Image (tube, rainbow, N blue to C red):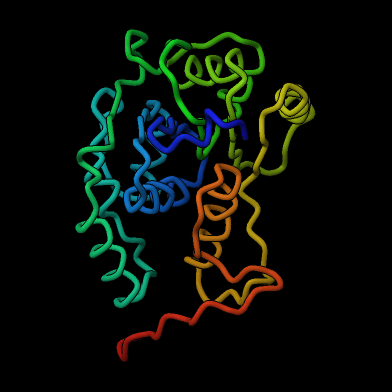
Length: 236
């Protein structure tokens, strides 16, 4: 990552599209809320549909509700961990740093290369988004912002979540990877003392943050002392 990309005053762009895995996007947002990095968010209509299906939240792609996404707690999360997430989000100054954009507004700053950013993440990334970006045929703001990061040679991380993967999708991934895009499929590892579904979500989110050079302690890292596990409440 170049020196400009490492400037914490420059924002990160986050796009949420219509692949399964909305939980990854929400956890990523929650971690970013506790950091100092500004975040520009856009959610595609298909992304909003997946959020509705998986999280039971109604999010308007024309005006995404950042607070509802940040306050979402998966139903399997134990009470102590849920309380910790809520406290961290409540104590952060995310309202000053998160900016939500309509998915079809090409007049926003992130649609222009003259607006300086540190990096972009598309999480989760749908097959149609892969295709649109690989063909430089943007049909919404998320795809346009990704094209901007490509032409400006800024870091772009795409997190596809689909299986099996077709030959055409593999070709799109290869094409994007060959021009510098980090392809980071949502494939959680199992070597970090997995205790819950949260551990698997945190694994993927941690790897995304690593690509952005954002320090985090979401997982037990190979070769490092283990993180003290969260004690479960009596109800669990």
